[in-house]
Length: 610
Image (cartoon, rainbow, N blue to C red; front, side):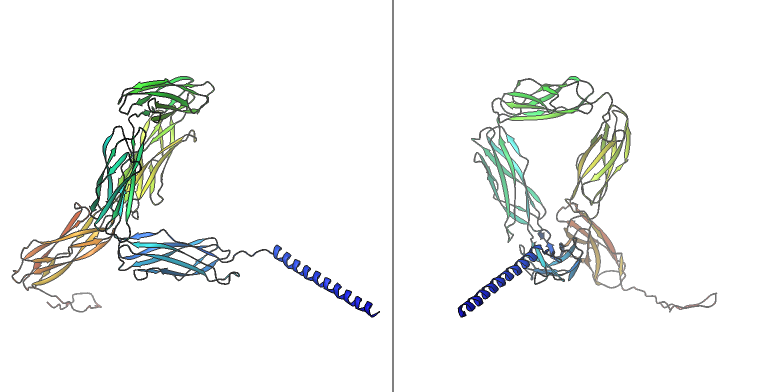
């Protein structure tokens, strides 16, 4: 009986254990299920910092760079800002203490870096860190982000420009002129190295070249072609490396030289418009530009498979000669208004199948009457200073009907503007006219800025008919200077006097000017600084000392002239003069009485002192 009771107690304990285990399992499943179905809260506060590109500066002073602070969280936020420099001794940064950014937007943060006594070639990594003032849990600390740019102080720089690619038809030596430009602010000497990708093209060049700041020089690279097979080529690279820069300052550029004793060039005629079905013949030109007589296999093709194009099977041309090749194009009766085909003629040398060339023209089918227009841009232009410039485009009514065209001028550079004058034009069929496009180069443009100026003409009778053409306008480097003298002066004693002249850089590029000061009276002495550097659109005061000698006589005068001449372009020069008179101790001073208030009209007397 006792053993049965114990057995029941044991069974009851086992049952309770099983129930406990089941309760634990149920609880765990509940927790897991809650975690699985509970949404993960989006990051409420977050930030992304983007640094601007690295920069190279050539003068001491303050420079500003725009970092971007982006709020990528889900709430508006304010971020504490910290800017650091890896070289605090020479590159001293500063930035605002904080910035507020709305969600899903960004703000630019201006970081100022002062370059102080930096050795040429030194640099600093400038890091901007933005830390949220609000916290997201998790993480345990406020979200933050940082990014950096590198600022380098470099007096030395170089740019190498290769000539265009060349094709040669004989073995021997060929000379190509590369341009090496000192784009730094100090005179420099560059070590030169020339390399080739093909030993059958052996290059040589001078060991080095010395250049004054902001000047350039042609460097002759001689390439000897020997053993090359027709069609072989080599990339010839010239590298220039500064001898003075503490960090490596180098640049290179490449041209390709190809050897061919057989060569050919195909030239297509102008595009054509036809108003009927049937066969039309156009004359292509095949030119043997090689040094050997040659025979060329010919192939004519039509991009429109419903049209056909045919020509001769082959043609033989003496070296240096050319022949007109007829290509016949058949426009089928199934053609509809506006159908067209690109007609291509290909010529391939029978002696060297690598030698081949092609060109194409477009043939368009139009019904008996149609609207069409063609716009032709003038040549590209370079302008030396900001302002308005007018260029003449040509608009030609190439249709069969009189038409009026809406004209629109655009500039690819958003900081410049382009305007068509007039904004529409009416032309008879076959007539053309000049259209003026006025381009404005604004004063904040930098040398080297450019814009593609496009004029588009759209038919008013058929808005699907339009044409455009473009030109490129480049704002070039302009050096100019203006000297302004102070007003004439009269001095009553001998001695040294200082007068402030002004030297203004009215060009668009920094410049250094040599200064000379002259006195028309050889007995008077003059002195001034030997040179001055002025940034673009700025001016500097030049103190000119004039010495009136003790031997000067009453009434002596001297014209004092200051001349400033650009070190980069001696033709850029200006001068201005003032006159100084010596009065030998004669002087006068007039003292007025105090201001007075009168209550009645009529004569009143006041005592002045002389």
